[in-house]
Length: 423
Ligand SMILES: *Cc1c(COP(=O)(O)O)cnc(C)c1O
Image (cartoon, rainbow, N blue to C red; front, side, top):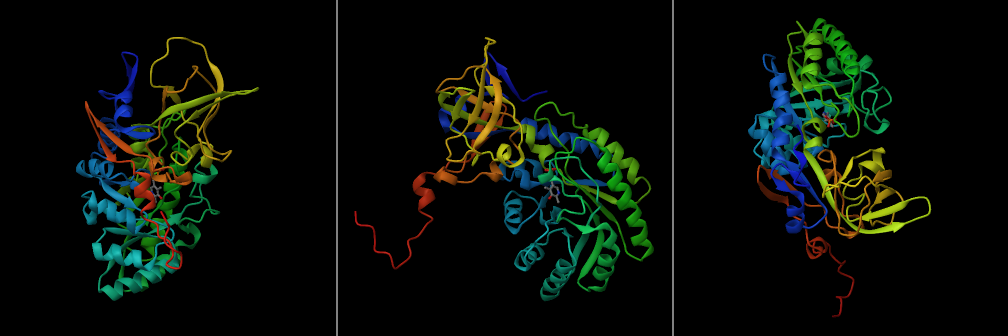
């Protein structure tokens, strides 16, 4: 079921017309459906029933406080990749014990903040990090529960910029070097090894890479136990894909069935770290057409959202479905690019689309924008960070307001040697 649908010819998020939000908040804005977020969570909650498993929301996909809190209240932990994300998770009410700290380049100061807050698990990605973490833990007089993230060298079959589980990627410790890393960890007195972690990529639409990665890590777990390590947890990571165009990502039930089969008898508590799958389809970006510029080969529809608001098309060649907010009955189309006002040729949201004719003032909805959308937004061209709105039934609320230009520039300073501006 879709939580974004036409009713009486107007696109709605649940029970709220997007045009109503646009009139109040202005454009562009992101809109998240609470019901869609809950439905995505329920798939995971149902999927792990009967398993010794937990789900930590990978909040880098969408770190809006209201979104994190919604998942936290449903029982989610958080997978974080920075001390800043930790502060957000805590501010949204996620208990520290339910936080997993991932990331390839954690600073000593960040590790210290994490240990002081009491995060439940740190997924270490290098020998250097083992040493640093041990030093910080020693200084604080605590023992850090860790897993080591291994890189199982499988091809996730996704875009090159979002695959993480190949030898040539920077993530994790090469599975062939993992035993040495575990040996080092066990010699470091203020680390307690609790398990193994992996995360092989993002937007996976096939279960085969999970199957082979789990099989490889499973073999490693056998060796590690033979080496005398206690391996109680297996962190499977995230990466499950969503629908942008015509992808057919596996159901969570099918995914869990594969995981259950591949980990049967292993005796490990499992952790899942979904990001995109929980939020991607639950969010849209709404924008208004500024003007339409006909060209020789195609028409440019210039809208008020741009690459600074949604960089996925530019960065990943991502394809997002675009729909008019007011439903069209006519079948006429124009061949067009949907572009933003930014001074970059890479500033486009869609290229070579055949869409219903658009005119200045029309609203459009960019679908499946809930993941890696608002979090990647910038203020390039001094465009205020795009606001975020949550809809729940017939209610909506702005969960991150649009800053005014005055608020944006008030954070900056002139160096003291510059004369004050004369007014
Ligand atoms: C990004 C990330 C995730 C989430 O990935 P999705 O593709 O959004 O599910 C999970 N775990 C780790 C370690 C990550 O870096």
